[in-house]
Amino acid sequence: MRTFDLAPLYRSTVGFDRLFSMLDGFEATPGYPPYNIERTGENAYRISVAVAGFGEDELSIEAKENTLTIKGEKQTKDEKNSGEVLYQGIAARAFERVFQLADYVQVKGAALENGLLHVDLVREIPEAKKPRQIPIGNGRAKVVEVKAA
Image (tube, rainbow, N blue to C red; front, side, top):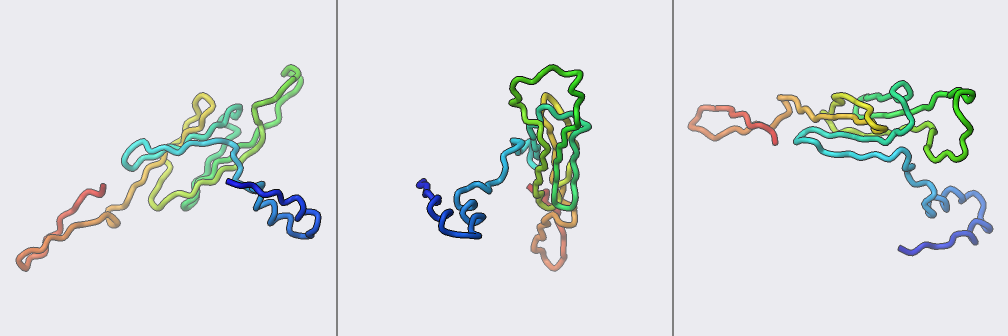
């Protein structure tokens, strides 16, 4: 993919900096914290979010309508108990990740293990919404239920 140098345009235009930033890719979706979405069964899913350095009391999970929001906010720590930090490579900044859920997807639980937050989801379609097969008979209507795949 080619990249274009937009620097000359910055010098000669006023008010288009947001447009040029979008073209440069500076406003891409943030990559912190990294996450995985995996299918664990026919109608089961798991979202794993890397939250190294966060405790259970510093994380919150909220499911509202078709949106799952995971927030992390680092609490202030006492500097007198810890030693001097020479290099800090582990990010401790606050974050908010929002996931759009499909219809009938419910959150079943969450667990924090080894720096990964696992959120288990399951898709439960109500019986009234499941497809039914109706055979053609000799004047008698008979309904046969078919399990959804």
